[in-house]
Length: 117
Image 1 (cartoon, helix red, strand yellow):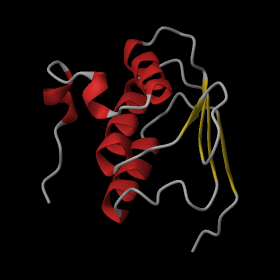
Image 2: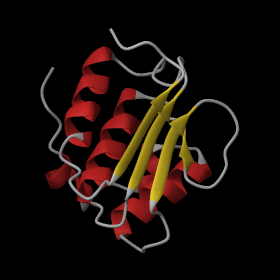
Image 3: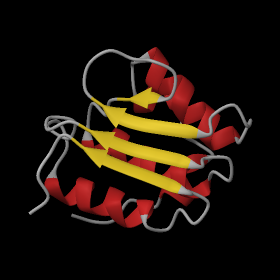
């Protein structure tokens, strides 16, 4: 499948079209707008607390990676749980992890709850 050009699509894409989850919308907006409120993000399963995100699709994960890469406020990032990427394709997870590697402003990363093979 073709790479999505998120830079080209960003101006014409509504956050509400990316995800129906209002809390995920808040996180995406905060990352996109660089409003400074969001300095840590945890991708996790289950209930939401401040700074927690659960991607519902490959497309949503792609946008999350795009906005994370552009954010200059995000300093801490974590992934927790075995099932967090169940709704996402392996290709989209690989692309997300590539984008994560471009986030030079992140000072601390934590990974827990799963095996790395």
